[in-house]
Figure 1 (cartoon, rainbow, N blue to C red):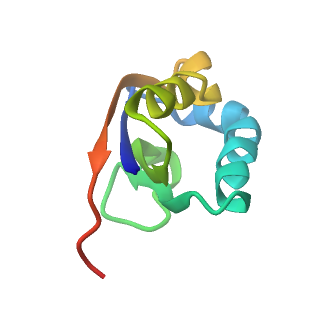
Figure 2 (cartoon, rainbow, N blue to C red; figure 1 turned 60 degrees about the horizontal axis):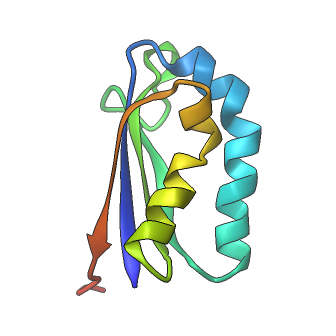
Length: 99
């Protein structure tokens, strides 16, 4: 089943993101290589593809896991969590209807 991992950043998270990004991307790439990743990316803090110093307000990952518990454990082990980037992470089942 698919699960949405919806994360909200702390204020001024950009420096924390920059430092933890390489390790974060390794984990997301592993999901992609396993054929489990649907979509992943950050939410720009402003209405721009390249928000610059404004940074990001959070992230969204939709991926396939065997259970909610597995998805929650995967999210809890994210390097962005360890680095203090996220103030809140919500994991919930996701049913793709379109496309």
